[in-house]
Length: 333
Image (cartoon, rainbow, N blue to C red; front, side):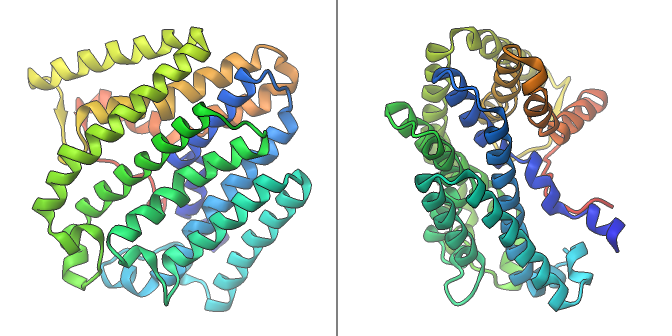
């Protein structure tokens, strides 16, 4: 059972887009404010990792009957209920330990709020995830925006750039959850699960997604990228490189030399997600580590390791010449 638990999808929280945008916020603040606190930064990342794991566990606990009914049986479903609850409480205890160590009032306030909303998102009777529009709003808050805010709050960095990060991260979360609901539409409809997409219908949801949510989110992400390139000028190099790569990918798709299986997520959003969640965090982590390699190498290794699944699936796509629809949040077989 222990071996199976090591394959639990909750561990992937450390390698998810939620962690990636948080890492981007962290390295942005460290570089722009010229802060050198590698140990505190590691503990801060760890606190978010266990928060994300809690989110997976509490969601899987209250979704157990729904998941089993559609064949999404998780490793944790094999645990006795009392052990499942104990595992959740362990995550809470570890998170409290992190808060006590970091001892920053603004950060603690945001962190506790995140925990409350993450619980109410899945737990009855509130269960925000089944409340249509409110579900996608809460999801946007708990998965990306509030963790990013926790980082800015910890370092007492508040300004226009903070608002840009928060707005972009919130709408990135909205894009993620609507795309996820669109892919799960048939299954959710069959078992009677209420989501934003099932409530308004797939055609209307896709129109709103493609012609409103994605363009507006894309604009915010471009503004975020410009902000980073202005504040950290050498980051322009990696931004230009990513845009060139995606221009080539777009041409290859048009010429049918590369097949893209994704039917919901637009190509331009994929490019912006790659830049903000993968290229920027890794590049900035490397740049930060140059200052004092011996002290910052663990921080850089965490940032690099967080890209494992993205790198794995991108490499496979290059080999197969097929870009699949991928969600890394399933249990390992």
